[in-house]
Length: 259
Image (cartoon, rainbow, N blue to C red; front, side):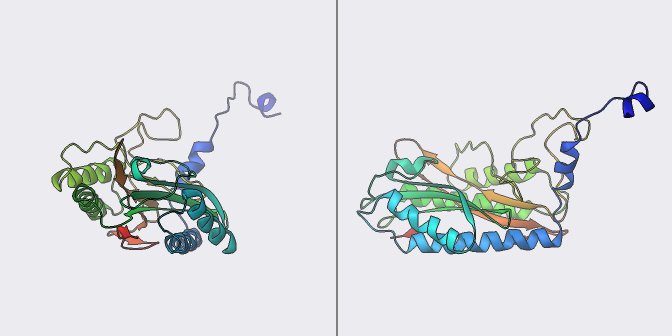
């Protein structure tokens, strides 16, 4: 009927316009994300309490799943790896944890349709000097990223600050591809990652993914560092962009957890 009434009319998919609008969260959405982040932190504490030499990755993961479910949430992913598997993201296996292992986890879930995402790491026994160096360096990188966050900042600016901080603090060859992502009703929302700009081709969007963040955007800021064959470290935070800076919606501090 529209084509008949308006000869020559054409239609364009406007889905990305709504993705762009969703970048700025309402107060109710922010509270839902905060509640999801809080439940995810509780699930983190639950599986930390069960960590022990001889228990398998799968065995430990079950405590995360149950805590999320008991709080009314649904887990979406849970990466947990010990030893050299801590170099990157892997699903839990039947490998038992051993003395001297490092471990790495990244855990995502949903509560009332909104996502929570958390990540960190630890060691069974005191971490090695290299592991401590990696951990300290990514903390500096994250601190530098936090310093840049406020309304109007671009994803690339946050990413470059994080990488420069990690390099300056002991990882001169750090070459991570991103330092986090947006989060909401999807685990990653437009512009998806905190990284160098990616070209976009859509009539409703800017030319690249380097879209300035408005106050009310919510980010998962993370900085993993792994070395294949050996292991790695990780820390991830959920933060709200404000006019003058940022505010944590989950834990404001992460520790390298020693079992």
